[in-house]
Amino acid sequence: MAFLSDTLARVKPSPTIAVTNKARELSEAGRDVIGLGAGEPDFDTPAHIKAAAIAAIEAGKTKYTAVDGIPELKKAICAKFERENGLSYKPSQITVASGGKQVLFNALVATLNPGDEVIIPAPYWVSYPDMVLLAGGTPVFVEGKMEAGYKINAADLEAAITPKTKWFIFNSPSNPSGAAYTRDELKALTEVLLRHPHVWVMSDDMYEHLVFGGFTFTTPAQVEPGLYDRTLTCNGVSKAYAMTGWRIGYAGGPEHLIKAIAKVQSQSTSNPCSISQYAAVAALNGPQDYITESRIAFERRRNLVVAALNQCPGITCPTPEGAFYVYPSIAGLIGKTSAAGVTIRDDETFATALLEETGVAVVFGAAFGLSQAFRISYATSDAALSDACARIKTFCEGLK
View 1 (cartoon, rainbow, N blue to C red):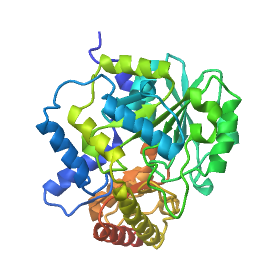
View 2: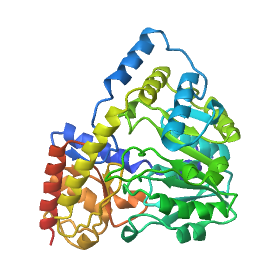
View 3: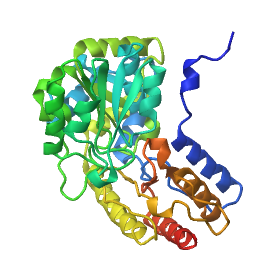
């Protein structure tokens, strides 16, 4: 009898975490490393949010809470959905978990049976397919090509739907590409979904506030109210408020689904951190100035990185609409040899050689389901980004 679960054998460790750990190890060993792998804002959590957490500690709010969130936070989330997305939810339709990732995982565990299919546009966040596999489902990938802005269209979605399809996971702006769907593009997808009432929508809106150049964010249930009763609208405070370590994610959806998610959470982690929940209340209800300030900084960094990478021989870098990632193609580098004698066979060998020869850590495209490309997170300083891009250019110029 095998000790480890057969399910675990189908799941890969997170490549983004692996790259971040490798960069940290090299840095601790004395190497000059610039880590561009982690999707984490480099700004500090706003002061009024930290103050709310301290006040909660001093008030003794350190006990267990309701399994899926304190009433104050659920009320704040309802207000946020109404204010920013035009979505009306009751507190009984809200779930709160230890990060956005847990919200998604709970929902999949609560709903998937063996044989159920989940449609995932590629390139995708590395955790989507593995969470589906852990929950017993089957991921089905639909490719969004670079020429289409890394976005899928209505025909792509229609062709992927089968009688076994249970969920469509939608992420805009996207990790890893930064691609964001316009209202018209999203409307075309929702029209397909209306024709297939057995398909539920899991909308991951984590990068909602990071859109640039006047782009207007919309979410599926907002664009098509007919999908409201089978959409789980997911979000969190990690990216919008620089609260990655606080671990608070949330979602709004039909009450029977929210109850099922709470059941899963009650037998796994139970409630999210009490102090983090009170901090999240302050984030959602308090001043929103930080969001505007961070968006301006990230847009400046996006422009810096896109311009610099497009000066690198063999690299083509589209300009994303949002998030804090770029997803450049390295099709023009395949088959070439680095200064250290490494043949660039694919994006993984490119990323490995780049790290070893220049100290720049990026994540290879195969991890996100679409080669030949790599992901850069520009959630770091302008100086570090300029240095990293200069090193990448030197590396590319040295390829033969």
